[in-house]
Length: 148
Image (cartoon, rainbow, N blue to C red; front, top):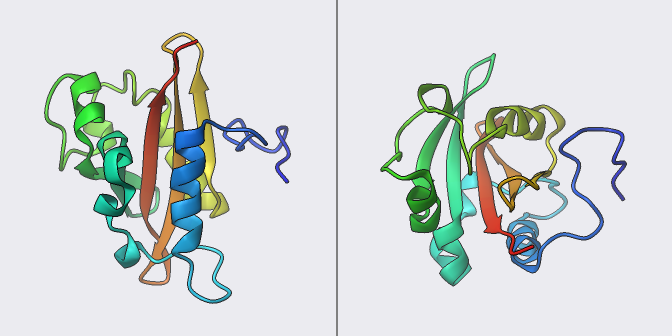
């Protein structure tokens, strides 16, 4: 159960079907009683076509910085140029990256999935934490274009 007052990035009870499939994939990667899957278990190819709308972000330092390790082709096309290997603070954070750094920080700090929906640009984004080296060291994110 999520408390929408807890965070501006709380995951609502109902999310887009594509986000739900990515979240189910993420949850299926958990080992034993671990609440968060390990980053090295993620294989974006396992998401089939959803991989085109997914990305992996490396998490560095304190304060946290985020680097786009792998970016799906639909996300890169929406941004308009290649961005693999770039840190978020090196980019103009326009759609589909507006408010992404804050959303990522929340996912790292709370060690929980986060969600963002843009009415203006008609898309939503899900960010899921991944464990490694004793901390949240990577994030799996997915973007869905909304038709309405």
